[in-house]
Each structure stands twice: as C-alpha cells, then as structure tokens.
Length: 439
Image: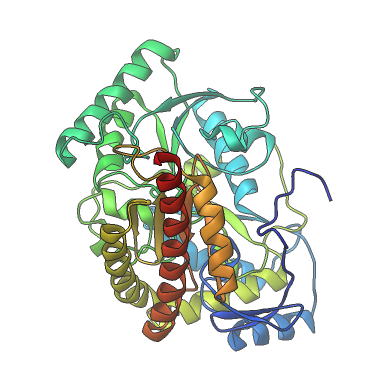
C-alpha cells in the first residue's frame, strides 16, 4: 500500500465483521462504531434488508453497465430525483463521491462555458485531480495544478473565522460581502459554479449559521453562477432537522416550500450503506448539456442500486432522520456539558448525528491553539474503551462523530461515556504537562 494511505491508531485494527452499530476486529474485540466507515454505514451494519436485496440481485446478474437498462437503477433514480426537490431532475450514478464531484464540475463548466469555480475555505470534495482542485484544505491538496481555477471564500469554518465573534446576521453579511469582493476582484466575471458542503466533513464538521448558503444564492443568481450542494456527507437526513443539508439555508425548504434549490447536488456514502455508489442530481437542461457521449462501466450497477434502494426504503420507513435529530440532540447536549468542564475542548458543533469536538491546548487563549496531539491521545483512549470515532479538521484536532442513524439512546450513552473518559484522560495528561512546565 502507498505511504500516503493513512490508517488510524498506533496499532491499526482490522474490521472483521459488524452488526447493528457494533463492529468486531480480527482478534474478536467489539467496538461501538461512532464513525460508520466515514459516514457511509448509514442505517446499520449487516442490515438484513440490504443483504437480502444484494443477494437476490447477485443471483440474477452482477453487472451490465449503463449501455443497458437496469431496473433498480431506474427506480432509484426516480426516488432520488423526487427527494431532491430539484424540478425536472435527472440523475447519473457514479461509484463514489469523488467521481460525483468530477461530474458536477464537468457539467457546470460545460453548461456555463467557464472553468472558474467558487468554493469555501476549509472544504473537501474528494481525492481526484479535479476534486482536490476545489478543496480548500492544505492537508488534502497534493498539487496546485488543476483543470479548474478556484477562488475560495469565507463562511464554512466559523470557530476560527475572522468574523467568529459577530452575531449570525452580521456574520452572514460579512461572508456575503467577501463573496461579492472575490467575484469582483479575482475572477474574470464568468464564474461557472459555487460548490459547498452545508457541513464541512473532512474539515471537522464545521458549519456556518443557517441561512448563509441561501444568502450566497442571491449573489450567485445575479451573476448567473450555478450552485452545487455537496451532500455526500450531509444527505439522507443525517443532520436531523432536514433531509438535505442545504435545506437549513433556504426558508421553507424543510417543508417542501423552498423558493430556490441548488442547481446540482452530489451524493454518495450513506445511500449505499457501504456499497460503492455516488451520483449527481441536476436540472435536466444542465444534466443534458454535455456535448459528447459518456457512459459508466460500474456506476449504477444492478447490485449497488438494488442494495441502495433497500437501504433508502429502510431509512424512510423507520424515519431515521427523526432518530438522528432526537438521539443526536441528546448527544450534542452532553458534549457541550463536557466542554464546559474540560479546558481542552475548544468547540462543540454539529447537527443530528454529525457532531464535531475540537480539541485545543489549555491556556492558549480563545479560540485556543489546535491540539492534534491531544486528539490522537484521546482517539487511542476511546479505542481502548471500545469506541471508534473519526478524526479530522484542518489541524487534525477534531473528533468527527457520525454513527449509523439507527443509533439508540442507550448506545449513545455508552459511546459518550467512553469518549468523555478518553477526553478527560487526555486533558489530565495535558494539565500535568502544563503544570510541570510552569514549575
């Protein structure tokens, strides 16, 4: 394996099997999964409904390609188009969120005849050559070369923003002014699209005040710029209050009364519950704008779309969005109480079951110096206590909490207890070090 393929823990673990919200490693140790394979196990590990759909489809035909009609792919496309809220929508399936980003940018650039793109600072949109070209996070940008020309604006990472102390309305106004200034001073005036995650995933589950992206949309419309909402991590109800992340930014969107919607949305991860699927949903005039033929060998395969259909049905039938709102709301409250007692916790943020905990070095002011070493120590501590969590952020100092959306209250209590103990342990060690230096 390449050196640049990162793995967690000083002694990496092999995930051997899973069931519900738990996984077991190769040595038989059980862990509560608070990361879901990077927000991908959306409903549950080894969900019987998904396993049954995959098995039945595999017994018929595994693969055909987009050169032939695939019934579950057509049915899934119809469901996604309807759920998107985008009028006259068309759907194209890919194998990943990265590939979905590539397609969305290709569509936008072809439709607008421009390769200029606006993106948020601290963003992440995938690992391909094109996707890292719109990624505003140095840790994930391997090269400055890119087929697109990208301009980055403020807004997504409030905790360390120069506008952080402003009230919500003033924060939004400052970011909108920055967007206008970037368009006026840095671009050639014919920008293709603006791409944004409603909650920045790899960036550390950071998010702006509700309404920011809707305010941005007013600016975009004046300039004819398309809006791409990256729902790879925020889609399918994970944020609890809304089914799509963008809906928190547009009045009436959660109730289906939105005055405006994104022109394109990317999706992936949770839809397949571990199966390799992603895609783009967009207005027909945008989706149909490619001036050349295109196909996909593996995108929208019979097996992945059959499994994704079963997974989506389970999500909707069991109202897991409401569960994410309820259980996630309780967990967020507990984490904020923990932050009040622990000086190494600089910020707690998030929605639903997409929560971030940013660790800082105690005694270094506000917002506090990033403490990736404390995050690493607490990550190991959580593992020892039988809990798997994610880690990210611009400085590698943020816990990313994103369990399957079927997480129960008792499991949330179990996970919080383990995480809190690990953070307290790391905090005590940091306190001893500070005390030792002072003496």
